[in-house]
Length: 327
Image: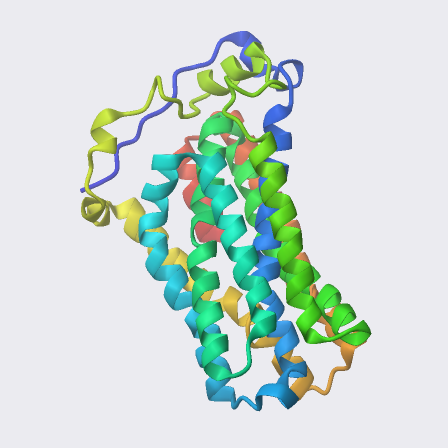
């Protein structure tokens, strides 16, 4: 069973001039980028702070692995329902509630007193963060025409890399100046502040006060998802039936391979640099950021190249395949 290929209707000539219709959609996606940056800053903070928490917890490498894994047990399990949840309540509410939850559980890490309390707060953090990627993907589908989606996706997705990168200098600086407890309080408060901004600012294109009618027309004519063009038959599909689509299975396999590499860098990489390479705080903050910086730069370049290829007339199917397989 293959996924249907539905090409959006050709937009009117005026819609080919994106600069003339407004740029509110880019403000929205950069705000989502900020949310994903804080999201990954929260989840990466423990991996950076953990080498300096040893005198309080005395965790073995195996115990540290279980602490990191607790986050992903919850994250993976709750993501199965996260997409349904985002569709049901909408990006404004889902992102706000998720940010509040993950911020509270991040701050609760400062109260941890041992192995099992760390396991608990990390599990709850994984549950709280699980709706974030689905929400960002929904924002792109709602706010962007097909020919701009690749770069828009690379923007919010790069927030995960930026969050992991800035966790190194931020956490090491806070630990050096105060203590590891302060790290989680500061980062948690930052997430609560972002949640307030997102709730205040986010609306759909037709409801947003800064989005002109011309920009909303441009977005919708380019294939963006809206209540008026949602496929009722697609909405009625059971989630189990999605596993029969080749596109879904291929993306699952691709993300499995990708994340097996990425999550090494946001879990054990800082500990490796400190314990095996004897890096001090300054070296950890500098060299530990190199993989993430490269990921951000080339992610944006890949998004720009993919959108340019679509605008030149190449099919979305071919562009996505070449970009993903080539990368």
